[in-house]
Length: 300
Image 1 (tube, helix red, strand yellow):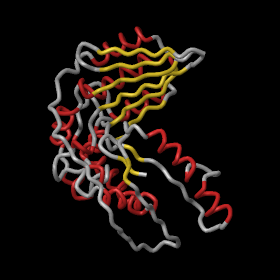
Image 2: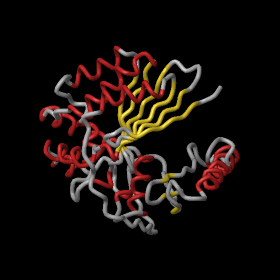
Image 3: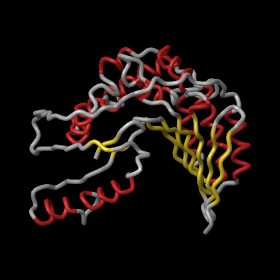
Image 4: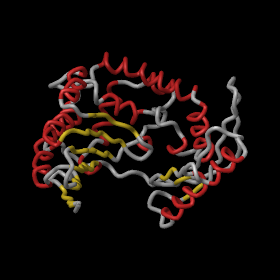
């Protein structure tokens, strides 16, 4: 099987990368936008994440219910997530529905109207998401760990924001964020599966040709890790804890060595931590190690 990879830049600046996979029957599409928590305005923590939610609340052509039903009709999956470095909108569909999915993604990213009532309901959904993260000890310790390690950086703040910041968001905040960061030079459109590169480029051009503009440069950010210990007390029956070690960013020259070391230490059922502390001694139920690597820094 020979996988054919191609890339091209559209005239408006959007970068396209494709992989044609022989024998595949489906296509996976990802629209990666270089916008995330590092772009949240001061005091409006979580705006990047809220904006991602807002893009599914209706366009000038379709309401939120129609957007949900259209992907079900295609028999595919569609969604989005906000990471610490970027935001991703994605679709997985049978290859016959690739133009259909691109048209829907283009409609969402170019024609969203951000209805006020829908945004107010979405705030409530995110507030529940924040509460769930606080109630989950595993999520909570990782949040506290990053807050302790990077106290003055977006890497240390919750992607979700805080209850106070989310409640203060306005429709104008969302529009301002999208107009400043959802721009061609901040966008990569990648696809893999049963596709023809030239046809995919033409379909993307049809769906995204109206996206224009250039983003402003970011101010350089220095991310210095700090040490310390933090403890939370909660009415749960077990103790949860995490230990963090600063590492390089996702392009660090030693990243492959680190991933190998991570596999040996706590990356699976045969790893040293799992085998020693669970299988031999029975001290824990869940234990693992993982690498979190970002644009500016990382931790193990």
